[in-house]
Image 1 (cartoon, rainbow, N blue to C red):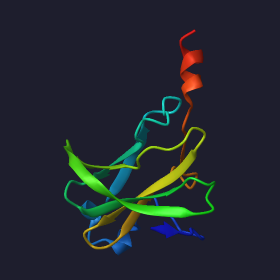
Image 2 (image 1 turned 90 degrees about the vertical axis):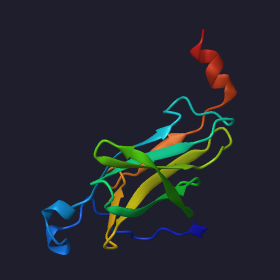
Image 3 (image 1 turned 180 degrees about the vertical axis):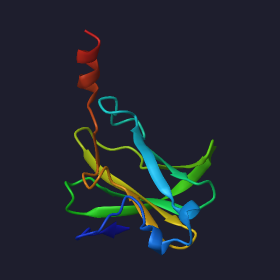
Length: 141
């Protein structure tokens, strides 16, 4: 599904007034991608993982990403991978991309009351660049 992103208001947390009590506040944090920066290649699948808490408070997660400098945005659901300590862990495999592809992304988790909480690196989005095979040759010299 392709989407244009326009003036999306992104909140790191929901105001307490919109929640039933303080214990309902949901956090989304520790978002990362694998392979890590500098290690992605055209033959490696690109994964994004994020954590939400408290456990069981989220009904779903998704990623919004662009591979053309933000001109077009794609939305994909994330899968709940497991529970780790006090966090639900969500991930998505975006597949492989050609060398030089620049990926820009943010993640959204929706709680059981329908409130969205985003992790977009404080309105800067997350970024990754897919390297080429020749990048590996220089790393081992």
